Image 1 (tube, protein in one colour):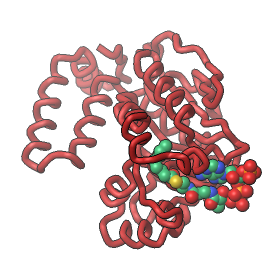
Image 2 (cartoon, rainbow, N blue to C red):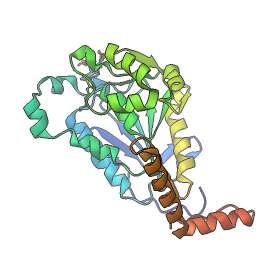
Image 3 (spheres, rainbow, N blue to C red):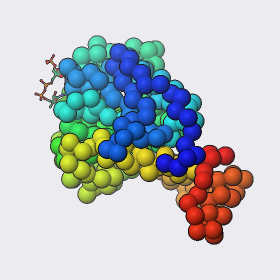
Length: 278
Ligand code: CO8
C-alpha cells in the first residue's frame, strides 16, 4: 500500500473461539489494513455455537470501529472446515420459546451489518450455518477442497440464518431449491459455476489468496469502497429504481471527499493517487 496507510491500531487478539491477526500476513509480508479473523473450534469442525457467534460478532464490530482496518478475511482454523454448521448439540435442546426469548439469532444481524469489506476464505466444509456465514460475507474465496451446502433438511429442519434467501439470490431458485430440499453438498467448482463463489484456488493457497484480494481492496479509497459496498448490497434488497437512486446519491456524495479530488487529479497528472480516507 502507499505511504498513506494509516497506523495499525487494532491489536491481534485470541479469544475462546476467535483468533485475529492484524495486520494479516500475506505472501509478501504484512498486509496493510487487512485483518485475518479465524474461527478456531477445530474439535467440532468449527461448528458455530451461540457463544462462538457472539464472539465473532463482537470481533467484527471491534474491527469495524477501527479506521486502520480496511478489509477483513474470515477463515476457519485448520484445513477441514470453514464451519460445519450450527452446533447441532446446542440446537437439539432448543424450543420455539427458547429460540424466541433467547434472541441469539440477533447475532446474525450484527454479523450481516459489518461495514468493512468481508471476504470468506473457505476450505473444507461450509455447511448449514457455515454456508450461511460465508454467504453473509461480501465475497467467497474457495479452496479446491471446499464443500458448500444447506443440509438442515436432513436434520428435520431448514436453513434459519439466511440460507433460503441468500443462496437463492446468489444461484437462483432452480439450483437453490434442489440443494436445500435434498441437502446435498456442492463442490467449489460447482459453486463457482453457479455464482456463489468469487474465485477458486488451490486448497493450501486459500487464505493467502483471500488476503491478497483484501489487500487490493484495502489500497482503494475507503469512503468510496464503503459506499460501493452498500450500493451493491442494496441491489439485492431494493427495486431497480430505488437502487439506482441510492447509487446516484452515493456517487454524488463522493464528490465531497478529498479522495475524489486526489484520485482524479492523480489521473490527470499521470501519477499514483495518494488517498487519505477523507
Ligand atoms: N455441530 C456440532 N458438532 C459437529 C458439527 C456440528 N454441526 N459438525 C461436526 N461436528 C463434530 C462431530 O460431532 C465430531 O465430534 P466428536 O469427535 O466429538 O464426535 C467432530 O465434529 C468431527 O466430525 P465427524 O466425525 O462427523 O467428521 P466426518 O469427517 O466424519 O464428517 C461432516 C464431517 C460430514 C461435516 C459431519 O461432521 C456432519 O455431517 N456434520 C454436520 C453438518 C450439518 O448438518 N450442518 C448443519 C447444522 S444445522 C445448521 O447449521 C442450522 C443453521 C441455523 C442457524 C444458525 C444458528 C446458530
